[in-house]
Length: 168
Picture (tube, rainbow, N blue to C red):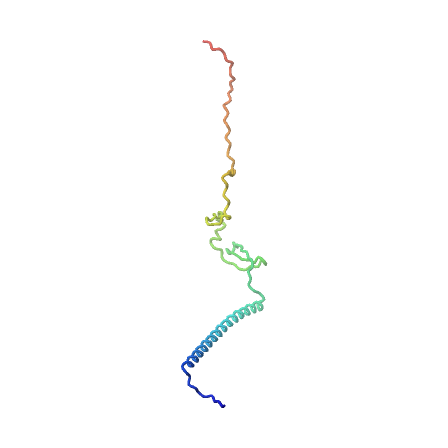
């Protein structure tokens, strides 16, 4: 038997099956395209981060130095009315700025020590000092009270005379 590939009119049921298949393939193609765009964006972001690191490393190698946190200290220079900053590790001068009015007057009016912070009412119980028990003795005063001495009767210089019978 010989066969030939020829057009055949579809039934309604066949047409519905082919339509469903077409819709599924269109949706699959859109999903793959969306995944490709997301992957390209992710790759582009990752590539950008790596390029930033490459630029930083190239600058460090080229300049043979990098920025790091270094301990510094400040000294008031009264001749220049400036605050000078020096590196603590090498003693090298770093920067200078004008003294503020407050810094200039600080030596005239030194700050008093700040009082200790009051405990917050909401603080945890272990953070506050324990209350003294009612049976505990009160603390000794810093200055002992002056004890009052009992006053003695005034001393008399006269000696008591022997008693004589009264004469009337």
